Amino acid sequence: MRETNFLIENNARYLWHPMAHPAEMQAHPPRIVNAAEGVEIVDVHGKKVLDAVGGLWNVNLGYSCGPVKKAIRDQLDELPYYSTFRGTTNSPLIELSYELAEWFKEDGLTRSFYTSGGSDSVETCLRLARQYHKINGQPERTKFIALKKGYHGTHFGGASVNGNQNFRRNYEPLLPGVFHLPAPWTYRNPFGTSDGAEIAAAIGRLFEEEIAFQGADTIAALIVEPVLGAGGVIVPHATFLPLMREICDRHGILLIADEVITAFGRTGAWTGSRLWGVKPDLMSTAKAITNGYFPFGAVMISEKVAEVFESNRNAVGTIGHGYTYSGHPVGAAAALAMLKETKRLNVAANAAARGEELLRGLDNLENKHELVGDVRGKGLMCALELVSNREKKTPAGKEVLQKVQDVAYDAGVLVRTSGPNVILSPPLVITAQDVGRIVDALDAGLAAAG
Ligand code: PLP
Image 1 (cartoon, rainbow, N blue to C red):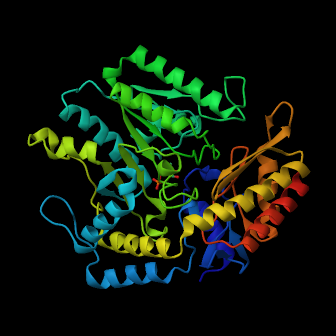
Image 2 (cartoon, helix red, strand yellow):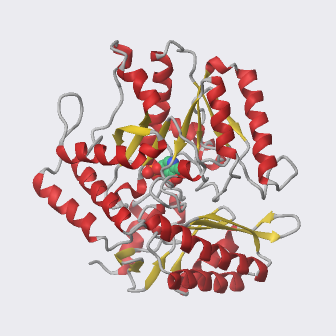
Image 3 (tube, helix red, strand yellow):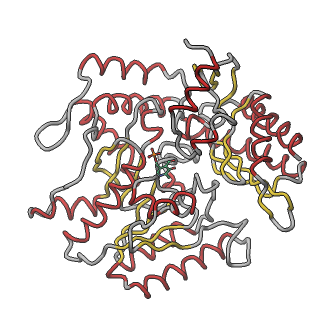
């Protein structure tokens, strides 16, 4: 391997990173990760740290998941690629579709359509939602409603429903006909209350108002994350998603659950929709579907939507959408192995138990450090929101977040920061001892930055 300086310099010279300024690489070189084992990564200097980011919310089973690795190797030998465009398919994908139908049948989702990742899955949901209405004789239902603070990937459709200016402004104009409701956020919201049920009801009223204003017959779908991830781990009140479902039903609007993060146990339930007792019409998944080892995603489709497509024999029912890598056999084999391991290890239960411990630890940090304005989480997706003034809820500056992250790293734990938030999404197989390591490292980081 080349020496470290060569890597840092050429990373800065030749490589553009997602969500980073190309000119910041020399001053703030990213950590070069060279190896990983269990729930730890090893950097170019040989330092081992616990990965409390879990790759990017996706390495649910850690880095040493033998069955997924073996499935990928074996499938590469057997059939390394073939397309699933009209006319061909492949065996692991058929088996996966069978298993996913079993997995998601409790959510009412039995048909699957495959993608190369989360943004593709979201794009697919948006397109299928519009097509559903066209087949159904309501071609004017083209608009989408989404949540502020929501994150739905970076394709033009996904960016259009995104609720964060950072992912929108530089790429506007985006899709017309997209409208945003406030996030179900107790810490910051326009309703002057921190009562989750009141906030949910207020958003419901705004949703109804927007529907009346736009005309229900122009709206295709509402897209929501069951727990908002990248927007800062915003956990809605238990009444929120059922209320959104009920309003959608009353107005013939499809509900798209973006479960790119939540689909395979991260919240402590097997899906985020199930966590809140809601059945969506379409669900986007990706990330943990291959434990992060292969770029892959699946859109799950409800019986209601499937019925409309499948009973329509006209050209408008043909799915004029798909990717070269839709249904990649290696991804399918990896996903099959992931499902088996995920079930065998019952990682949702571990996510729920470790998540409780983690939240308790973070609550203690909130009591101890003025810097912590809010603590949120469900299962193993948690966030600390840092503030420079608790009363005024002034978001902490970039340098503070950087300091917390750097000191935590030195103490042996990698955490992610996004805006004023420290985001935690460790592998779902972490132990109680790992939880302790995360809390201790953050304690050190907060003490140094406070
Ligand atoms: N949707 C949600 C909820 C996500 O969290 C993400 C990524 O973090 C995406 C979509 C986009 O997925 P990808 O980055 O794989 O395109």
